[in-house]
Image (cartoon, rainbow, N blue to C red):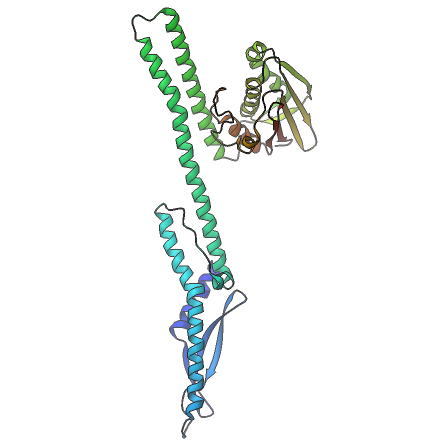
Length: 363
């Protein structure tokens, strides 16, 4: 950008004062400095044109008019080329920048043949501007979607709480129904609390790269503890749990934060595995990384949903038969990335899913 600015300053000087006068061997000459564009660089080119008078004699009209016409044609062509290759794109860039400052991120600058094949710096500037507007447009779209999804996720439980709270105000409500409605209200408030906490945690993690409060702990014991927390759920569904392939692994990281990954993956596995199904968890360590796999015999994930399951608020179960807030997997993925790894998934409808978490060994 600095180099382009310097070149444009030179261009301005040449355009302002293109002619200079000299006297050579008794001939009055006028030197015209032209601008040409070669190999993506602005260069100067000096042409000597005899447009003056011969000393002490009469000028040959053809000898004078010819160079004048030639210089006029060349000058006009160069002015047109410069205007289209440099000045016009800069003017368009200024207008586009004003639109962006007013919140219009749909603007995109086009380049004609001259601009695309001449000044390299200007071409790069336009390309960078278009990339910037694309990123701003994507960010704005995400912001609107996030607000819309977040509002929707809050609206349903709030309406439920309001409705059952009104029912509790009825004098003729039986004690049994009163307890039932109070339980529903409690479940909805817990859902809202979890949604709010996950949203805040995910937002905080997206704005930081350094994790604090690291301690050394047993990763295999953490996996067992997180699965044990869900014992009432998988016991009631008679699900077989296999954790026999857990290697003893010590890990140095934020223990509480890492537990979010296992809690989410285990909860999903139990939730989407039918009665009498099976869930297996393995943990293996190599010299470079640690791999944890969670395999279930559940309903699986539709093929068209696989590319989107790590998107915020996305739920593969469109019927919402199994309730979730659509933030668990994005949060787990972000935490895994902060550990220098990530989460991948393999799934076939009706055949279950396998989630594989990779963590950097020396994170």
